[in-house]
Image 1 (cartoon, helix red, strand yellow):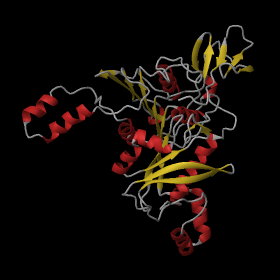
Image 2: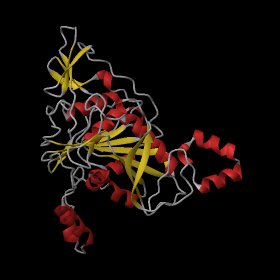
Image 3: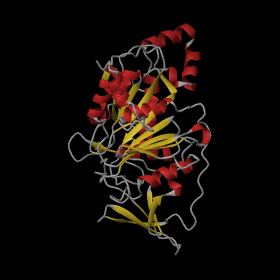
Image 4: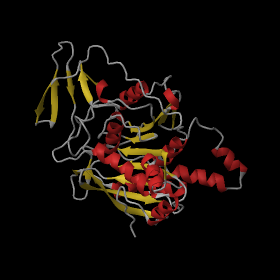
Length: 400
């Protein structure tokens, strides 16, 4: 049985409570705090489809309810944004966010992009400025309506709504944060972190300073593979990508007002960095895999077996052998589990300040004349300033 609630509707228990305390008073409370609108009823656990109406169009999404959900206690929510040429089912299969949710008792919502993918049943995101296509819908409005629907449908804690994006889904999530919306308490990115559309300034690709203005400092965990050929770690690739992972992280440290150099540490080919001192309690963490590709990272089965054997064995000698040298961090990374731990430590009560916009780099200017070049399915922009050679990168529908 699927439980689908239309935004703004009320369940029978909610109406009963309204009668008891006064319908007018309850309506006023719900208007001021939609977090309680979905409380009071249990839901069938598992994955279920849901229709979310935005701008007169019914959009699709998939939600997961853990078996521990009662409808009485406010629970966290994680949005899971799929990559290009994929869909919500495929993304949950890839990320395993539903398994983490079942273990930890939270809701997952996997929304579906509006652009058709390469094969039937797959989709991509109409990312503002970089992968906009004719026929694509307003994804920013869709995400906002999805957030509203989640609050009206489930018993959720509005201070613990997080988001995770893979590939094109992470680029969509980046664009949402950059557009100034502060709905997510923290965010995670797998092969996808962006900090504004790419622009070429004096021969170097960088994030557009004026294209990313987050509402506040936000905690971010990002993953990248050095051998990723779809969204190259060092930059380049498709027109929508261009600047590399390091530049994206550096830009977010500026936006979040972070201090330090991240104190990078490398264990078994995995480099972990953490900027733990940013404005308003925000933090930025990253994992870079020396042999990582564009695939979603998975924990090494052999390592898991060794750890499990060490925990179960009665032999002190074997335990000592496994734990003789404690590494700086555990390189056996499962992104969803690691992100959930990171989200749980994000103190959302401190993340309330508005991020001061970073100062534009000298010698740059906003391009005023853009012409479409269909040959590269992108745009080339020229500026009247002779010292600034600047063009923006725009991606394509089948971008990952």
